[in-house]
View: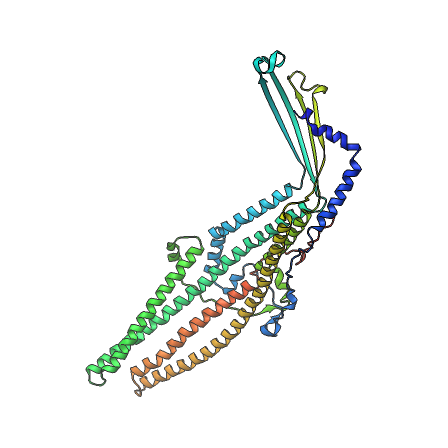
Amino acid sequence: MYVTSPRLFAGRLFHGALRPGLLGLACMAALAACATSGGLEPRAKPLDGNALSAGKSLGNASLSAAQFPASDWWKGLGDAQLDALIAEALQGNPSLDAADARLRQARAQANLSDAARKPSLGASAQYSGVQLPETLAGPELGGSYLGSTVLMLDFSYKLDLWGGDKAKWLAAVGQAKAAEVDAQAARLTLSSGIARAYVGLAQAYAAREVAENEQKRSTHLFELSRQRVAAGLDNQLQQRQAESMVASANLQAEAAKQQIEAAGNALAALLGRGPDRALQIQRPAMLKAAAPAVPGVLPSELLGHRPDVVAARWRVEAAAHGIKAAKAAFKPSVNLTALVGLASSGLSDLFSSDALLGFGGPAISLPIFDGGRLRSQLDSRDAEYDLAVANYNQSLVGALRQVTDAVQGARSLDQQLAAANRARDAAQAALQLAQTRYKAGLGTQIDVLNAQRPLLQLEQQIAALQSQRLATAVDLDVALGGGLVLESPSSTLADTSVTP
């Protein structure tokens, strides 16, 4: 039983006589413990976002007073059906459920780390009995039943003298913050995936329309060629060429149909629905893309808007606090324990003053020799920090690259679309001229059909360019953070030192 524990008498003995010696030993051990972590430090350093220049690549005309994207950035494309699809997907989706589960898991881990820093108090009640035979214990103890009842309160508290427990908690908080940003990023990834698939669906419909017009044109041309061959005005060469055009147009129409089905299936999957959901999606309306413009505060302000960058910064913070916790493990720890209770052989005198049971006091522990475990643990935390910094630096460089790619791609596609539109206007004028000549008896229907072919080819090319331009608009909104409101760490590089 606790009342006869030798630790109780040892505590009384050392309380007065050896207290100064214990304090001196603790101080000496603390100095020795601190020395054992020497020579282990992280190597990586986070990049300064302002040191990554991008103004010339973006072009001065692109840098403006433009705002960062709104949280519903997809509405800028101007299609109500797209708005409804994204709203439906954000209501519930397996990918979002997984991200939310990871967030709850990280928050629970942070709460566990926080609970470990606080005092604990537990209560217990126990009854036990024993009867020894006289043949073993003799007539003095044997032959009778002995029972005992114990009521106990157990208190313990670890003093966080070096901030190690707080550092563990802050590291878990950093991981939870990163998981929170990841959960928001999952919604951005989902909405942008739907927008891109929707743009692909619009292009597929446009390609099918052009293919159907080409089918009509080539079929008409084939019929004319066959009539002319029958009349002896042409040979089989023209008829075979026309027949090849019909087959090519049929191929394009079938390919466009397959693209429509694939884009619809992709949208249904992103919505978390079955393929039949795609059958309810109508042809997209005329989508529009705004002129490319980025805020003039790049790249510094980009750090607080990109979810991947912000999450990487939180993981750097968490890794830095992990280093502090590992360093604190080299130092002595002090635990306060107290045990108070009542113990009696019978219930009648359990609550009497004679039944009081108590034990407690401080306990000091320090590492002396552990085979290099603590140094290896600190070295691992340093490596984790270096890895987190490397991921942060890579995400920052990649973020600026994505913004630049989107802006440059939009500018180039705008120029390509302008050139393609001029070419289409010229082809349209040529077709009108051929039609005028045919009506005046100066040309043939074949001339009209031949003049229509370049126009259809240009319309198909313009549809593809418009789709690419819309995709770059989506890419730019996503590259600028997608309108997410994110909480960033107070600093990029946390202090990894341990201060008493």
